[in-house]
Amino acid sequence: MPLFSSFFTVLSVASSVGQAFASYQQAAAMKAYYDAQAQITRLQYDQKRIEAKEAGTRALRETNRAIASVVAKGAAGGILTNEGSVLLQQTISLREGAEDLRMSKMNEDILKNLGALEFRNLQVAGQTALQQGALGGLIGLGTDITGIYQSGLFSGFGVTPTPTFEPGIVQQLDENDRMGIL
Image (spheres, one colour):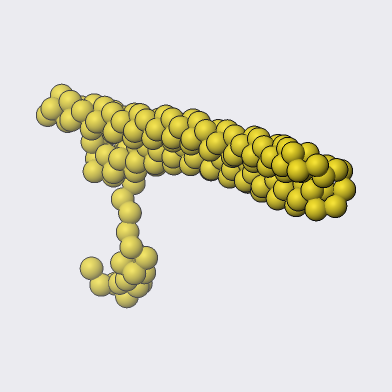
């Protein structure tokens, strides 16, 4: 019978170790997933940032065209281009272009910060998943080994399980012993 018992003891321990390893591998896969998501997110936000920068470049280009048009129309009409209504139109076009450029730059900065934040959050989620998986595997292994020990499967290896009692039962046994009751 000890051979039969030791086979199941070894099988139980091996199964518990396998479960702990599988739990760790699953956690490592989740970390890899979160790391990949972080990289994808970084690329997506970089693309959006580039689009915001291009919008600023377009705003400058349009402002230059508007100012050139105002100057050309004024000069074609024989008006001085550096005074009066021509200068006012240039100033208005320049102000609008500067606002568009400023807005584009602000969007670029916001996207940069959001991208960095989301990237870091996904990295932390991956690290947390790995830590939880490793800890869960170790806790599961410890729980399984304790269950194997308490079931007596280690008894063939020179280890005797200690019986555990609920506090109420132990107190009742002590009281019965004092009273002489079996």
